[in-house]
Length: 495
Length: 95
Image (spheres, chains in turn blue, yellow):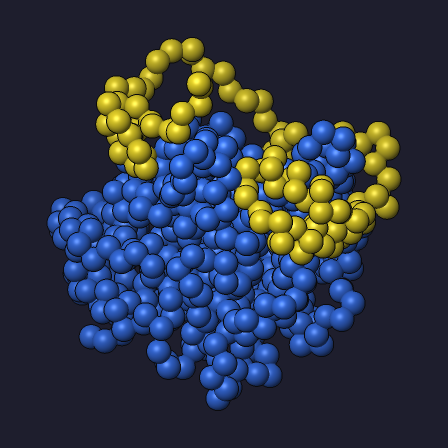
């Protein structure tokens, strides 16, 4: 069977339970696909021994008859998650050689459910980027290409390795994290599904922190059903994360009926951006028609502070990052610079951080330091926190007026070429997250669903934004959209 | 707002990141561009608006002030670039 790696999680679960396939077979198939796909730069630390051990244990558990949904499912884990005894370096030089003595809550839950780890996945350094080009491992590459043009394209970022691995069928599913769009934008660029749950749904414990008030983990999968299955296993209260919600996790998969009759879908007028490609507008209009045909009521809504979301994000995220990344000082873990005779502890900090952090991380840490510094705290940081309150209120007003979910494009363009943004201003790169970043600022769940191809043959995604804690309802709307869009295209294998 | 090289140098110092002098003008220019982008926030009327503290309304939970973990010195030190005799080792800080 050569197509084992192409299986979806739900299919593999059923086949495993029926005894039609073993986890060892699935895992071996994935490990083979991974070894043949180094050109994609997706897996940066391969863990075949751990994978085979977990697969054998999963097979024994399945034979015992009481296996959870993820038992025996081979997955990839973003490098941002701390995994015990396995390199976990957030794609940064500063964490070179770091092997955690502990397991993140989310990966711990996945392994308890029987999931198999194939290895760690590439990403932007400390999850700061939208193209996976800031990684210390080098670029991850999108398995999709423009027609017959062999220009290497970005899989998006920061969860670029996760997106490339799932889209190229190197694994059945992967974990991602999303601070400003880092699950949804790469999902859209690679034709897969990705959901960022409500802030507080997934424990952040053991996930390398970027901006703690925005960071959330979530699944990246081949379809909406798989996203529901994975999210179920990843969510839940954790006393070790003080912002983790003490709420029951519903059975998300059971909520996938595809029936959205009577639901109200909002279309925010502020998301019609100047200079947005016609293809994106057309895709968005088609999505609106699909949901209307499925029985939803479509209403135009206003989210008046949308244009201020990116500038707000680029105060708050760097501010939190500058504080979180203060821990990388060359003392407790990771890289320490070599010192010359007579150099002291401040030289050690400054040289270690200059050598260990890449350019974009340094830039954001310094911007964060600036906006938090005496004399600027009120003008920048406090003002941004006030605008954030207004951005959240925009969504609250929309939901209070009866809107169940909001439909937007996932990204302002299809995947671009690696290196194409090299000479652009950093602010140009930030614009990639224009449709996704509002959702993090408001703490809401958001899902990206592949909905079509552009004229160059690249996938495009639509985003649905839901009410807080209503991931089940949101996934059901995404399921209806997925069924209507009927997106089944896969990238042609070149790697 | 335009950032001069002195300010860029001061910020780099505060952030404990070594930036060589010849890199400061480019860094100052990048800061200026990013701050120009951020300055859009000045257009927003924030009179009477509370700055956000928590995105989901929640009270931080309290717990017993007790020891729940510990006795793992070897694990704590296992990733240190320089650990000696059960301690993290750093360059001399006090004369």
